[in-house]
Image (tube, rainbow over all chains, first blue to last red; front, side):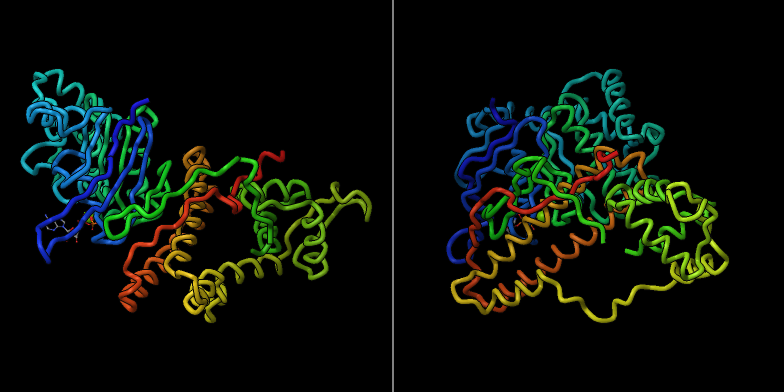
Length: 240
Length: 198
Ligand SMILES: Nc1ncnc2c1ncn2[C@@H]1O[C@H](COP(=O)(O)OP(=O)(O)O)[C@@H](O)[C@H]1O
Ligand SMILES: [Mg+2]
């Protein structure tokens, strides 16, 4: 089966000469449909760079990114931007929602940009808001929402329509742990419906929602978690 | 964890039998800490000896028939215990901390690889707890609370490992090269719920 997302020998260097920054060094990563992968690493280790390259927002210096088996370097610009709009949902810590648009408009916007006419776009957007329990906030503006509600609207926007891949950069931002958990639960639920997701975080409590946790340091993937070899290998904690 | 006080708390709701206490204890702690009936009866005997509970069953035989109730002294003891913080004034001799400290002075051992081994294991444990919570945590408040406590505890260990990693890297510029830990299967125990027993 082709992976939903594949990074193959990706390097990313900013600048050149002695001041060049090697943000990614030989990164390979494959994410299956329905899989939730978390990327953990210290700040400056290349997490955001990995995500922007995976989402086609930036090109790798070398190496290849495949989305649904298709190499993005071979795509026309039009095709690539259509892919970004239609198949990939982004949840970024900072630029989340557009302040002048209601929650519903924020969620329907990517569909309308993609050519869906306004009525069906609104219906899909309402369904997405409903999925993340914020349908009752449809007409509110971002500054009228709590942090947790804003994040849920952002995730609704990232999953609306036929999105097959969610890319989230520190999606819980400054949320308290209960709200942060509901963000991860929402992404986890989307994955159960077949969406692939990559979540970047330095918070192990959030990363623990992932099927697989990948550790990155100095632009290199250095390790990853493994699923338990067999359920029988578990032992209960003895009572003290 | 004090089984003694947990039993007192259950009895503060009303008189109960030994077996019932065992079942309620496990349910209220989210089925994370198994408790055998023998332990329940020994504890009840001690509580009775100390005047914190009384029983009104038929003599010595067939403990399961005995009905236990909490005394006034028992209620006071329970309240005092609930409000007394545990003694955390002395740092425990933490195994992970010890291993990292020792790894720094053992020749041929790359301390940052040791840190990563522990970090990966802690994250794997957290994944397991989160998996259990996401399966049935929605309607089981007690279990979710116990799992949260475990997640926060493991998270604190990971944060310490991250801090140690950064501190060691800054201290020794040679150690900046990324370590490549060898992937291997989980050789360590992972948690599970014990509820299946019933
Ligand atoms: N646009 C850019 N220009 C120059 N350097 C960059 C740029 N983006 C990121 N970097 C550098 O690349 C490295 C990785 O950054 P980033 O991917 O943001 O790390 P993280 O998200 O893990 O904190 C850092 O050293 C950062 O300063
Ligand atoms: Mg970042």
